[in-house]
Length: 134
Image 1 (cartoon, rainbow, N blue to C red):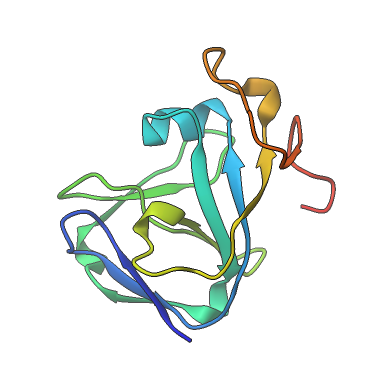
Image 2: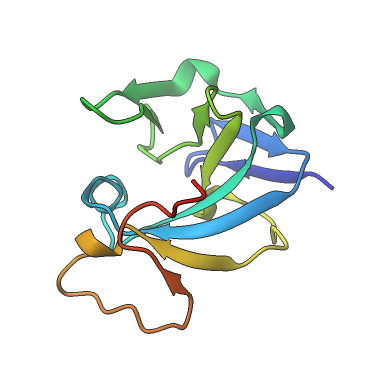
């Protein structure tokens, strides 16, 4: 099964050939600022299953001090998948996926820094920081 995805303008395109292992909601201040919302919804998969198929020249990156680099489309500004070569993982903003990934969000992370105006109202696991298994 292959899952396709891309940015808002369609310039950056990718495919994922393996399963999405987990989807989380991240409430850290950087994810909130990057997405302009209460949290980022991130789908995690194996980097070996991910491939960029178009738009490499449109990708810009930002590397905040003390944090992993963030990529976005130069044309439309969409946040793009984060490639973690150290851990062999890719973190894909779930809104970029064009098909049902077959996995549902299962946890909230960085809840200790969530937006003060947002209340988590579901019954998913909540972690103040990164879960120990990460």
